[in-house]
Image (cartoon, rainbow, N blue to C red; front, side, top):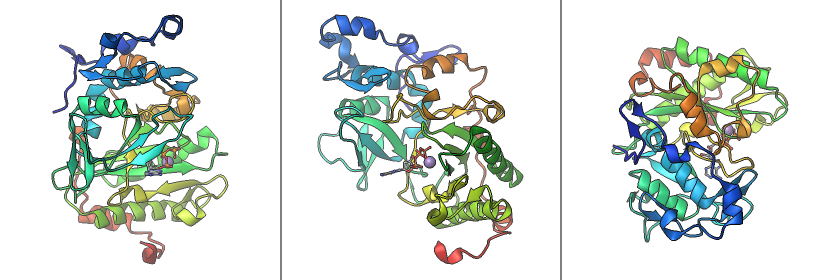
Length: 336
Ligand code: ATP
Ligand code: MN
């Protein structure tokens, strides 16, 4: 089980108080460097704690480490014991950033290698990776051991940037309704970008090809039914006003950004679990609406965790579901 640091109370898991208020940057700017003793997070010494990784809002490396510490109980169930891809930006988001899936030497405590791939075991591993310049955490759709059978579907909805929020919300509702009609329980998260991810916990009973085929059939079915709204084919993804349903996130080796991961983009956005009600609101939750500065407060303000039922919602993809999903397959099979 994930180590949750100071994040537990009798009422259940809550974010650590220390990070619940915004970091005091005014003080940081007027004083000299952070005291070394104050720059340890879960026992990990954060070097260059004052380094600004984001400028607007100003987020230092130490702030980022403390953010991850404060959401430990929320991020770890989705991050631990999966192969990961990391986005490292050692000089901050204005500097060079690179994706990394392998690391062989000097692994931080709490990080291990599975096959050739990195796996995070606990929150100290997350902090150790932030110390190495990691900002974003991306995960595979399968959990270890036995990562040949996915336990999650991700429908990566990528709207043309000109698409209005109301249209994106309506299309996302359509995706949800289809998954519910098939007997599944989907959950929603922001990406910190222009899209949304619809995530479905499943029982790990099928292999990658079958799971991806199922997702592809759903994407094609939606395109077939609403060709003015959805595009399932990457080659047509840039069509104006359309939403590309990227089902290829469900391939062996593909990743999706983890819930509660920060994004290395302007505004320090966070990929945030949200409730379906958000789709009824005119307030656009995308981009930096959720960010390093406000996520902990937002968690405190939750009446219910929008993903509370996640672990209990796993269903096996049955033969009947797979037949229903493929009912409108428009013959793009060769593309698989
Ligand atoms: P947005 O809402 O802006 O689309 P996103 O996280 O969905 O945000 P995409 O560009 O759609 O971004 O990518 C989907 C997923 O594919 C990402 O979450 C990431 O896990 C993975 N990905 C994207 N680019 C790379 C890359 N260069 N290397 C490795 N994985 C990547
Ligand atoms: Mn996307």
